[in-house]
Image (cartoon, chains in turn cyan, blue, green, purple):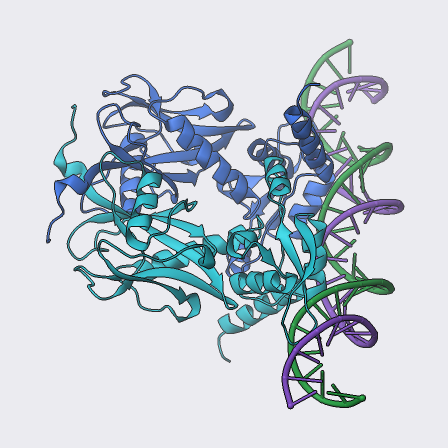
Length: 251
Length: 251
DNA sequence: GTATTTAGTGTAAAAACAACACTACGGTAA
DNA sequence: TTACCGTAGTGTTGTTTTTACACTAAATAC
């Protein structure tokens, strides 16, 4: 058997879930499809993988072709292969995700994309194929990641305020954080460089600007350290209680 | 386009990484290949996916065909798609992993497997294809999982001693744990039922037997609670220090 | 100069974690 | 029957981490 029977072959694609952050909102990059099926619908930027192409390479290429984004670090999340997920036949897709600073990139859609656009994640509800499911899986991954690595820095401009960082964390975790505790924790990680500058032209006390210390981060990561940010116990207990209540038969 | 151009099609398979625990050792289920390529070599139980078959279904079917294991819960881990990972052509594989009680199953190899056998994970070093890489990815996943869920119970017989449970955790995490702290932590989770029985016929003080309380576990899981077991700070610091030292230029 | 808005700061109580050493209880063998 | 061997089992204390919580500071707008 030097070649595989066609019986074992299927089409497969990569889909990219790209998160960004802007105006206090967590966003995701979508394309408007210019091709059947789901022509005119919003979808994750994804397309077929070439037979001689590694998966990671394909994800990068497809993302660039459809949106113009280049040099983005992509991470594999999960593979979706329900037999009926594509109306035209069997298609398996490998989902990738990434975090980018929206301001760093210009969107230049091409190929099957009519348009590429950032969408608030809270407003996305109807996507082509099973892309909502894929999006959810990646959002879960992001939530996990944010507790493990200081991912915030990937999403913010090079200089940022602690409040902006906190808002980002709150958007990802979909919870509120205590300002003082958040600052204590973040600063104790020693990953921020205090630029000793402040905002300008804001109609209130201006905030200090910070920068991410990537060298220190790389060093810490190599040592296998963690960067955890937990939900408060009170909230956890509350959530648990609410859940229990919900499950109880109304008597 | 009602069918996909063959250009976009590739062969794809599922590979299963099945962990078990026996005689204080973490084990993995391997088959001896009876078919080229790598005929006669040990490999993960994996095979092609049928075109009309969901991935999870395929993983289950393949596992049963190759090893005789049935009704095993499998979880998708990662997809491997390097273009050169199979000597005969492009093959993408989706890796699944699972935890089983070795004593629950009889191995009945069939199909391309000459033999199916449990191997101590510490002694596995040469596998067909890129299966070592796949194994490592799944082992990492297991390490993560053990800190998040009380997975130990999946691997032990229905009744077990706390010492056995501790040994299991130590094997997975590749570290030592403090006996008293471990017991305190495990018991405080309230997931164990004290059977009020003890071992029999052992040449030393017999240990109490416990059972896993699955109902409570399901309830806690639904509430989103965590079951963490951390490495000691001392060890973490030591590891970090060792790492730093390693990186320093010898001067 | 007063109102408005966001920035920034400290402490104390509670909880979790880490370190640590001896007694208890079987069987076995002299 | 007694001594011994091997594993089971058990509490306390100091340290660190986490949580909860409320006021002052600095800029602009009117």
